[in-house]
Image (cartoon, rainbow, N blue to C red):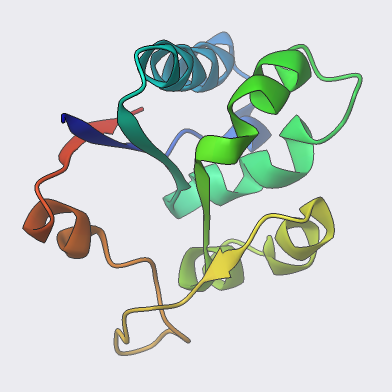
Amino acid sequence: MTKTAIVVYSDPASKSEEALGRIFNAMFVAYELKEKKQDVALIFQGTGVRWAAELVNPEHPAHALFQAVEDTVVGVCGGCADVFGATDDAQASGLSLIRNKAIPGTNGIIDLSAYLDDGYRILTF
């Protein structure tokens, strides 16, 4: 079976159409792969960790799609949330903060290399 990790780096704080387009497209792919019963992991990394607080808001235009793919969300990179000031918002969203890889200068990040080791292809948005 095909396995895909979808990593969102786009920053909602930019308030750009590009950032909104990237999150929609990331979730479109997650939705399509989920429909095909493929293994999909949606990950929020870098400034993309800020999406956690945005997508749980019922007023956000991507909220309905987020609800449809929420079960594919692995979590939010904890070290990135710390660096980009999104830890409290990420925790409040109910998504998991992941810190499974020790990296100097952080409290731990999501280990993307583990997905490669496990045969995932990685898409970035």
